[in-house]
Length: 112
Image 1 (tube, one colour):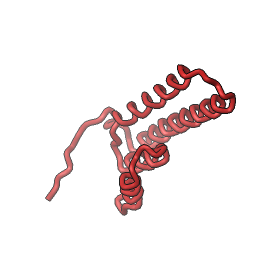
Image 2 (tube, helix red, strand yellow):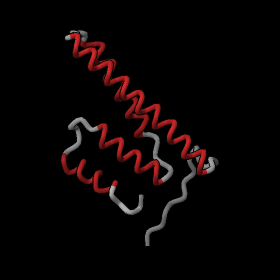
Image 3 (cartoon, helix red, strand yellow):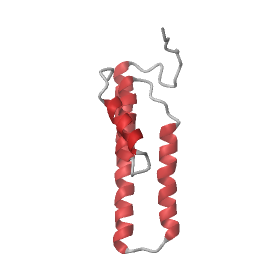
């Protein structure tokens, strides 16, 4: 029988409601940043700008945000579900079909 390891996170003292609020707050920040980045990239493309350095900075900012997300493990099932959903939404063809399909199947789990 598998056992669940008890790990302490920086969120361990938050009551459930506060944890849910914090998850919502960070999720909103992440989505707003993604929307802003997309708007900037769209404007960049619309102008036909040849500023490769600006695109590289935008790509680095996106990579930095994804690195931060990958280094912040979910501490609740709701957080795990949100992270999986975000990864599916974020994917721009970088994941293979098998990985995307597997993540989509996880979202349908009765555990969530």
